[in-house]
Length: 126
Image 1 (cartoon, rainbow, N blue to C red):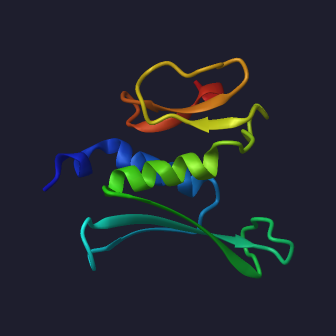
Image 2: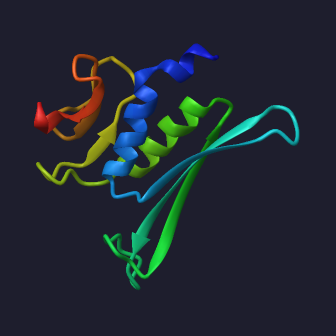
């Protein structure tokens, strides 16, 4: 098995996507041609105006792709988190897959990997 699939950040990133309200998250691939492409797909229930709700009238989808499943999931997490607003501190939200410092922490609420908790946490919740 590819050791990158055992990286706990993989499941942690899926959890972040679910915490945005996604009702389902899927990992798919296409091996019709080389290279194999991996897709991360997430769906949210939305109301008639396209606003995410718990029990919506429709479904909105977002996707991302990469040459490896963990990178596809990381890209989808960045795509759905970056530019959003933190529900706790109201700062613009951002997702960080790296263990390094976040840029402009006074302006952004970063989702950052916490190895002790084995999950991504929001900066304002630390």
